[in-house]
Image 1: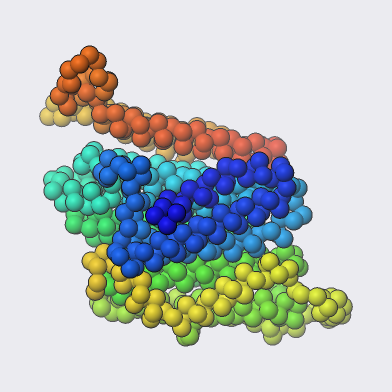
Image 2: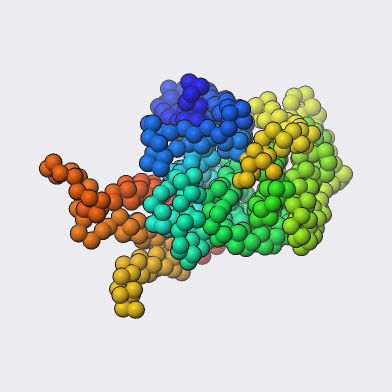
Length: 499
Length: 124
């Protein structure tokens, strides 16, 4: 079993997804348990594979014993192993969170939710561990198709948002497919490591530029890189809470990882990636400011978080675009930090809407009394988004700023600092409403009554509160351990090996 | 000049087909037609790949008789297998898209984008 960890990461969630509709017929609890077990196996396998990769160097797993470039290869290096661990961990937490959320829905809907959810997780895990560019396309489509359907669970508004995401997302995947078609035409290979060796010898600069542009735009749409982010706010704000929590936390990150992987590991010696990344850098800088300003303008907490995601994804893109050691440290650390923090924030927004039906920030008065634990975690996560020490967000931003200084890009430094201030504005607005704002006279009495009823039991079911608190602890732990994470894992994920 | 133009005529046609698809997605109002335009794009890309596998004077990559021919005698089968996957993905995408459209139509009674958006705004 240990020898097949890389395969198990993907195959177990995929196989369980296929049998979940049958299990759901028998009992919905069985479907829930098998889904949780599948993600647990994926998590343990990722962790095992990551440890193996850290101890003995990257792990190349050949499917069916066919050596690349003929066969499909899964590569577990510290980067992909770490990301697979992150995806399966968040996947497991959100699955636990989803159970009470779906309790009121009919059994059939529950079953299909778990099926699609497992498919989505399996697709993302596959994107992370694969070492083949076409295989990446297939997994990209698996996860995306599952995500479109999952978003549509949120009702009729969400169906429209999901459909528009489908149009944009499929067009993006087509661009990516065309891009790798160019690479295949130039080299006759689809294996990432093989492509990296063959491409520098190719003498067709125009075709390479076209391929790079198509791939970066295709994956850029998927990661919601400004100005290709149009699908994101609607999709995030109308999908059901567990879905938003999951796709906001990891889905866009995996596409960001794919851009990083292809630009720095496949196209590294061709020179075209540098030009594309330069473009990406300025798009990202504009996106950071745009996303932060749009977030301030929102009254709906979900839309605010969605626009904040646009800005934060651009942080990652900016780090990748800088391309020096500190920049990539910042980008990779931010993938991890933002996945935990934004996942946590969306789960909190989801539980507030689930418990009280409130999504509008201006109605948040006395939320700190209604849901003390949840709001406490919200404050921690908000501080991390703003980037105050000792939370996780501070360290990734620090590395990004250091990377910008090293590259002499003072414009980026200004953007990063300005964005932190803008982030502080929109998060402190929520905190102010929740903690300091006095409700209107008539409502105050009603709130007191509600509070006295609520005081007798927990604010949320344990399976909703536990993931939120775990992620909240994660935000603090990641901040404290960030040096260790960089020393143990991230520094081995650099394209040029050790710094 | 003429040879470059004629040599790449299939690729020009593919580019035109793909741009027709993109034009369709952007310009049409009807959500179903957008899905059809999306299919046009994916067909264009499928033909692009299939073109890569073709060689003049080559045959299917199957061993007829005893003798193994040279590489030039066989068409490259790999793009075809890749596109088999892409076709399946296209079918799945169309399926999900149609299912979503069915729900949109049931709810709003129209598939014209502006009308759907108008209905959505009057809902909230």
